[in-house]
Image (cartoon, rainbow, N blue to C red; front, top):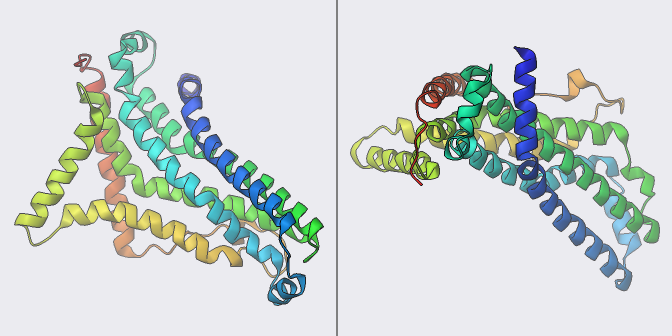
Length: 304
């Protein structure tokens, strides 16, 4: 069973590797080009070394790295969730449209394995691909910054290369991405369900009902439970990332060593309301995944 699941996950990777990697790589290219342009333009600028040295005198340069890494990663993460959104919308729709669902139905794989493989691909594999691209981009920009410091000796360029700081920042970024995935799970599960039964335009099936329900609830009900639930998905995901930005300068322990137990902390405290909301989202996601498997075994038709 595990071998079959790994085969399905590998299939998802090879089918989606262009989407999972190409878009982040384009964004990475933009970042690197901007950094190179800044580096080239610095040759024609007079840099006030004394002023910059005095500004940096009261803080460790390494403490600036986590915040800078978080800023670089932010647009990548935003694009990542857009990629995942469209991935789940087409995850079960595309193979019905091209007829390949009949082939996979003839293979010794269960609907549960197929659904789980797509879940892992969208919520773990896609974030991992983006995370790898982010790390490479950050290292390239760090290298360009080092060249800048070699030419303009504001401070030793080696001050930027603190392995504990860099590794800790990377681990925190990936942990928060997975935490965001947990909050956004119900929305992605709904997209997968729409992908399983939609005859055409799964995006409309996913977005329009939510918008209509929100409008009706606001117009006719005093309590906005559904609206608050949907908004909370984005609110708590954004709050986790914002907390990471504020927490950036505190990633390193006072001994200057990396401790995974001490360093990797919850992106933000979970009070009872947030915890209940999270579990409700997980339960609704489970229901959507079960229904998606049921529809997948029955809905083979679609409108061209």
